[in-house]
Length: 271
Length: 307
Image (tube, rainbow over all chains, first blue to last red; front, side, top):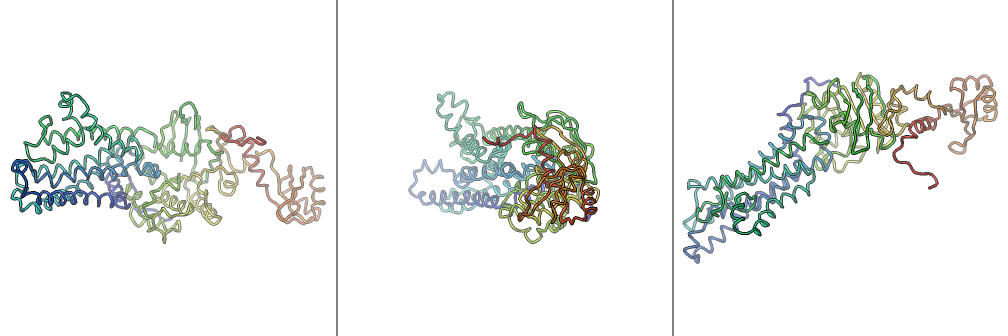
């Protein structure tokens, strides 16, 4: 047997490359990313084409409240989170469902490094795809709205923030379920819990007495975050919410908590 | 070199591994033997740092594997051949492992060649037979050209050609001076492969000795003899102090099971009496018997006979 010329050492850079190869070498990655692009762009086309066709009959007040930016990119956040949770969960749970985790940890026993590399590669890949999708969706939407004379441009206030915020929300959703996956070690469990956090919790909160709801709504994940992050019309936003960045920070806070708990579970528990 | 000292792993109140101490040395194949559920896999997981011991320590080349800076160079392991992502090709699977340790891509092709998967490297591993999966697992273990190799039940599901291949491989790896640690629940798999044996039952160490010593220790060591003159041979063996039992071998041939005499002695007796022998071998059943006796008190799951 040929003895290797170089002395193999486990490294963070190598682990990043390995995790990228893991992601690139299975079909589910391409399917979920393809669906993410389709979801974002298809929403933009459907919504903006619809608004454009209604425009001539639209009441003046509705025209004032119309947010052309949000119409084109809210789909990426709203639908994209549904798609990207699959990728976020599988990044970590497929290691457990296949048993691959045992080999992965045998060749890279520094668990913190492996966990961080997984999260970093997931972040990078979803960020690139989501940002590109967001710009495509925005451009497609504004092109379709060109006849309304209210089509947005990136140089207008808050528009670039909304376009990037929509993509960031998608990345955070992926990381949220990644953290859940590390804690639960089950694809179905992680995805179900993620849907509970993103959709069920905000709905249940609406059952609260309205005074309480006004106090807690700004701290909720899910729909109101999407609304705040993707909106560019001050008048449309809920007065009980933080600013767009504030809501994104709240959501990021939950993600960080889950990522940290996931990291502890990943490094402390038996594999 | 793998060293376990007082190694213990408890799940709740049951101890899967209980106060194990052993040293696995380089240059020989060490068989790790025990009935199903004896704690072999748990021990291997502890060695790799996948599980944390409840007490005691286990080190690989003097330090816990979790602290290794050169993990693939230190130890290559095959725990479960099916534990790969079925959607990934064999080559990409190995590449994922290699990249973590900065092992070049050509080494991936090299190990695929060594295990005989060069032509199937681009196929998704979902369609692999168990034998092909075992070969892929072994390829992964060899990637880092490690000084220690660890295989958990490697011949499970292999055809005879595959079994012979893996035996030859393990022997040659040991001959190169590597530490080879291989588990099995079947004695018969070990007798042609292992030089040294570590036997456990219910998580406890039962025996840690050389293969020859283990065979000699077994109380019911018998020699199987096939001869066209069974009556003469039986008389001669009995006269020399052996106990003789008659059995029916394959194709109805008469076989003698002689205990209390070595193979050499039996050959000499036959020669002295002018008896032709067609077959002389230590009875495989006796090795199994020795193993069963040794582990009789520690079998986790046993079918109650007559129940």
